Image (cartoon, rainbow, N blue to C red; front, side, top):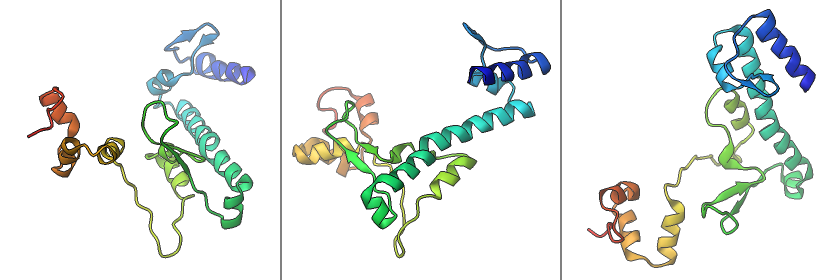
Amino acid sequence: SLRKKLHLRTLFFKVLKLEPINVGADGPSLDKEFQEEYRDNPLVSAYTNVNKAKKIRDAFVKSLIKIVSKNEDAKLTGRIRSSYKYLMVVTGRTSSTDPNLQQIPAHGKLAGYIKRAFVASPGTIFIKVDYSAHEVRGLALVGNDKVLAGAFQRGLDLYDEYLKNPTPYALKK
């Protein structure tokens, strides 16, 4: 990897004579700022695209292949089912693992390739849902909090309501 970095630095800074944007302890950086500054250069653009493809491969393709090849349910059905965790998450939010469906890329050409790996069963469809404050909604129901549940039923945006009046009972109207 060090040899590869040296070759890339030679190409970009000595051969193409591009000016470094940031310089670290080990020399000129090929970081995001460099890639953004020289995005119109075809070789820098190609370098950026290769890095994006590698990231997608490492983060998603390899993990999906590993799950399909090692998970008994996936071997039997050919389907991957994510696990959802509620209690073990430090932030109090919901998390998805094996695979993390919350991290599937949403935009760009490469995102489309990953999304195509997910196919609905015959006679069913996939839907994408962004549950706004679903953890808070669930807690309002479980805790039988009439004020909070009522706010959701009235379609209030809790964040906007809080900004208008950040008192403990700002949702009462």
